Image 1 (cartoon, rainbow, N blue to C red):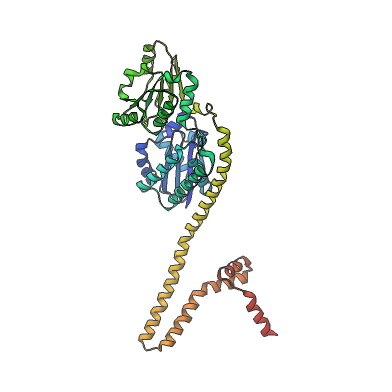
Image 2 (cartoon, rainbow, N blue to C red):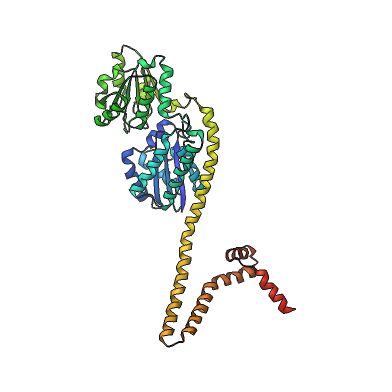
Length: 430
């Protein structure tokens, strides 16, 4: 059984492709079951799908990377060649190392961003609850999250982190010299929007409105941020009153179209509007960026904008990489141990069968009147001979074939000292 990490991310695929490949949260459970059903060579699978990456972690009994590309191509209606050109794959120990780097934020668009560890944890947990995770992925997830936690606590990678939310507000602060006076509309009510709201509050913005498809969720978040709450369906009526819009919903389709924004700009009498779409798939139609007086940015635009604390995080990242190496080696070691468990169980079972057979034979001898002492001696001799026979045969064959490596292994395993028996033989000859 092999472990495969297959995926694409912000380095290998443009936003347009990433949003087509991304899995909506509500469809992840179905996708896990469909994949294991459609590709029987894959026995376990977990899917990490965020704004910056879609990755599939699989336990498979054969090379299945092309099969995964075909499956994704069919499921997402994307050309196979397009996926092949944008995807990457890591196997076994390299797959473990990659997953650890991802969970620790070392592979993130915003180096060291903290949300990714929770997203990776949720992905593996979902696989467990859906029954698509077994011993292989359970081991991978345990050591991945263990290593990521060590990195967050033992290095400075988690100090002064730059999250997507932080970068979003930093961009707004660069564009508005009077940011505290601006009105902000946040689309969505998830963790990222909550962080955006907190950072805006930290920058002095007091006029916040949360818009969400479910009003109750918007109201709950608004209460924490001292903001107002509306439903997404009401955004068109009030959009013109906002100077900035930051969107991060879980919708599979845009929630804000060109026509709605165009009308809002007319009502604003050409006053500019800053819009940032950090959702994948996008929440704001790309054509909105063509409108005059609208400054539309996407998550990919954030990479080149924020440099705060970057040098410190890069220094921390070098130390974190050594912890990743240690974690990956621990994974390899535990996986080798796990793979040997089957052999160990078979060895023990074989010995137990020999024992039971010999005990049964001795009991029959006793029942037929054999002297107990004689029966016990026969049991000990027969049991000893049968248990040591495979090893003695291996010693004989290894000696005949000149396999000193096997002889050394047997000697070390049993703590033998062959020189004494040879010395005895030499004494007899003399």
